[in-house]
Length: 176
Image (cartoon, rainbow, N blue to C red):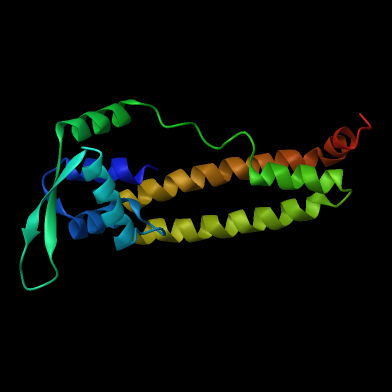
């Protein structure tokens, strides 16, 4: 996920302080991975440097100094372009799961044991996500469903691979 473009998208709603952008980012997109304030302000500085946003004057108040950031026309164009482009299909062709199975087989180890442990980890994560869905709002359900569907696909792959371990082992060990 592109943090700069996501912050620009949030900024397109109207001028905002970094604090407000962080709060909204974390509420919508930061489940389990909230942004650090330093990351927000460093990103806003780069966006301003690159002409995608403009930093307003320092506003004095009861708390720390604040600036409102405003998206520029160039920033709006970047957000529109980003929203119109498809996200790269995931996962990558070379996943860690795939690499561990193949490497275990190359080394003559029991990849089935690894697949069993991985299956258990996936099922545990699915239970956690299901509970998260029960307690969450509409956006939480949408986010959890996305993760659950990806885990289900991994589980199908794990089962398919486990059923063919002997054949795969012969292939990677050069015994086709």
